[in-house]
Length: 157
Image 1 (tube, one colour):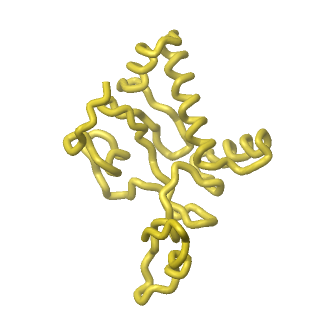
Image 2 (image 1 turned 90 degrees about the horizontal axis):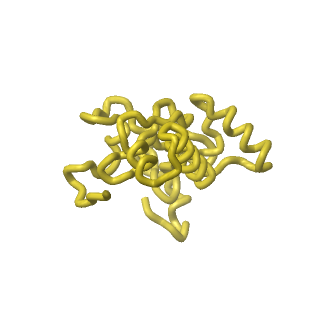
Image 3 (image 1 turned 135 degrees about the vertical axis):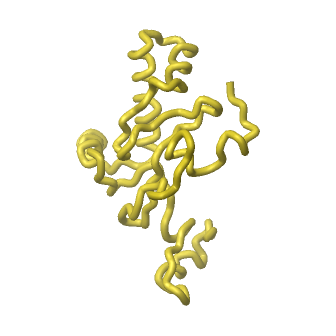
């Protein structure tokens, strides 16, 4: 459901003829982070952030944390502050980052995209974490979401 101006979207949840989840600009949304996410040690991270920032952690805060943490991990593991070695490490098989999502996050070597579980949430609470159980991928479970290498024209170097 797409209703960026929020004219009719708020009327859809719980008001459809057949009870079905509503997703999009009203209803369930896919997010990198949710302030009420509590699984896999996220409660401790949320609490530390709240003590420091005096507010809830939002998706943008989480994304910045992952970026800084990944670069720091790459620099410490390679012993270098240079782009080349850190970039190679981040895209390599040895890199993985615990990111409070139940499985490691990694970067795709072919386009540099962060592979991570996505939180599916309503306005107040998370409902689920994708990829959903039963969706399989030949290389990485989190690659079940979005375009994969064979379908993409992206050849990031």
